[in-house]
Length: 590
Image (cartoon, rainbow, N blue to C red; front, top):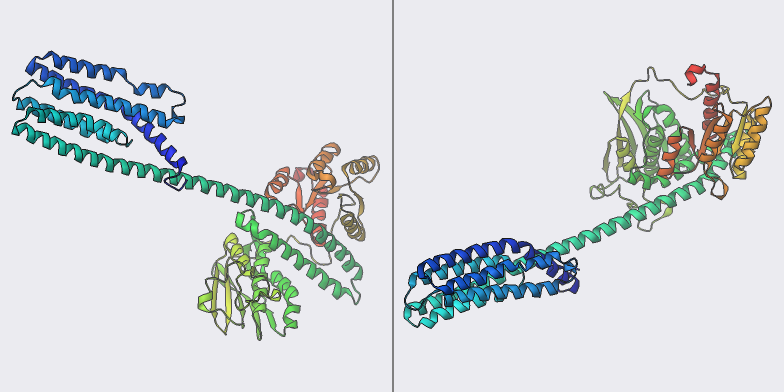
């Protein structure tokens, strides 16, 4: 398509040229008719020759023939451009020949310079006007200009005297100039059409590439949704089993190991979320949940995660206590700071890393400083690129994949927290995050205090096709004194609910996985069970689904949703919130 000589492009250009000529034909026919009839009337009044009336009649008959209407009436005219180009060329030749008869029929013998001037001016004007409208097709140029102007030249030369020979030479020169002008005009029009069709071809190719990119993005989203579900399932089971072990070991010498295990599980879950969400960040599918965030607990969590790593490398990690509160998404903010701290530790050989927050009017600055290798000026513009690492040409996996700072930049843009970087090669770096401050007064903490007994529901039904998940949740809730029935299918869940409704211990909460065995829809199953057993049955969806359409369906259902892997304390708090709904007055529940 990009080759001007390609048959397909040449066919498209010819089709457009034929359509343009026939579109301009009505106006051209009318102008030609008025010119010819005006000239005929003037010559007839001057000479009273019947030959003038004959010429006028020939021209009128040719005009009334309106050959261009055949093209418009043809339903498949656009499919045969070559035929209609030849058809138009024959009509143009016929009109030019009729004009060529004018000097022979309309001017009487003898010296009639006034009449000759009139004929020459009118024929030259008609030739110039016709050349502009007909030069779209190259074959029209000689067929329209040569017969009429050559006939005029011969008629003048036939008179034989010097005056007529001079006029004949002028007409011959004019004919050559008009042919050159018309050919140049034709080349410009053809080049314009060719460029237009090439641009259309490029636009079509671009649209195809965009469609292919969109399909690839959709396939990637589907893959990430499936991978997210498959990876979150075992992570969810590990987190719950670990919580059971931690509770049983509380107060023993091995409790510290269990606590560190749970910290590692939490970190692994966060890393999994980060890796799976990076593409969703680019697609704009991650919506931050902005609320007041206390920085001290967040800094404490960072210390628990990175203290051992810093100690192993004989580095100091200091997270300074702060009274500051900020407006942010706590989970996304923790991911952002975790990547900054992890990056600082990787590139620090001696000294350490300091994380500090300072209030600056309506803002809070969070600085992550290190005494590492620093960043040279020429690298500052590239450190946020994916897989870009300084001083790691061998791609040592121990130093990461080079996507940490890329995720940091995406998260800072998503949260609206500007990120500033200052660094000196060999002296260390400082990454500063600027956040809006918020007062801690009036902020009510939603989490329960450590050691406070949560008001859990008395009986819970779990619907999940994974045996490991059923065992883990059952162990966790049994350890907290909750009666739990764990089933793998909707029919079993319906039987448990029906039996419980007849007894004195009804099921208060249904925990339901969204993706069940054999492709069953857990969301639809939960909605059917709730519709049958009444609004008193609270439903909580637990899922590893990350597909945007599926998440939108869950939000539209109005049911509470927990995203796997679910930490034990988070699951218990969610159950406690549902238990408190039952104790609230009816007006408040509604």
